Image (cartoon, rainbow, N blue to C red; front, side, top):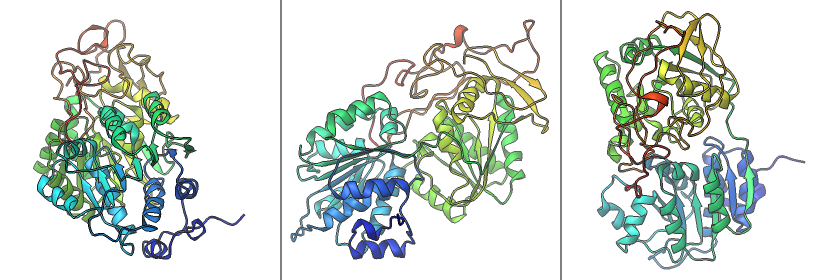
Length: 490
């Protein structure tokens, strides 16, 4: 059977010309399965990671169907709605749609938080065919009667699991209730938790389910290693580490906004050009930081997990996990920012004794141990605890161990959906909350340095209160404290 091509889908010549100009040669697996079904108007549930080509999988058929019946009136009504969890992802989707419609007379615009209402209202008043939006700002504009969804023919929910993590699911349900009952709905998600499965059952009609093998196994071309280091020593060593990789474009991931700013400031002192991107930055600041990084004006981008699925910059040679993520799958998304487009890359994680439980979860998820070294480059054996609340220690010699995954919720540290702003240990950094942009809340951990001195029982003394529980932090996240009543504007 000959390989599928974009021509074989029956796309119009103007769209095919756009694809040729963009050097789209042949469809990816998810595009091959989703585009023909979407062109027929079927509802679709797609299980796929970023980097699989899913944006084109829903954008191309949506554009093709709308282009078949373009209203003669200048005052257009919204006929396609694409909802994304963060500003960065929404901006990427909108940029892709603009590139696909250079020869198609369709109008599109983007509605996200952190941007002037006036400009967005002005764009809507002129009428648009395709609206790309984050849930928070979309709800605001609907409440103010600036957006009418009565003519929507197609709705796309992108990165649905991330919207669940952020707390946008109630808003999504409300938006879906406002749409015409007769419509096409496409939902794409990297994972399929039961809440998302329930959403598909209640709001999609006989959907075609497409699964592209999730990237739970990290790319072979990414060299991964762990550096065992005390939490306080991380700040002292980050500049030296990045100077070692001088000439590379580098992304550093931190767990908190405060941590991202501290790392950026420290790198500036070492004359390393760096910019931070997180929820406290305005939309324009975040866009400027990304553009400067893409153009090479800034060599280091320091980001929180909100950006892990939204940074698509070729040429990133090194990813550094200054803090390990609370959710193992986020590690895969983070290091996937390197080794793109067939290139190779390096991922280095700075791991303190408090993070060994998280490392065990990550190794279980990716299915392989990660080689570990001390700050002098000597190999160390990691004593991965069975539970995140267990006592931890490093031992000399050997490589990384696999460890056993912690049971969810058993000790108050490993939380379903991550430490989304739940209780934090005393002395930890302020967690990243649900600020303007719909970001995932990211909890901090205590700032306890690693000590090689063992206790009498041969185990490392732990920080924080007994049983691994955390106290004293703000409520508002999954699995730790009460969830806030609703997300703020995206």
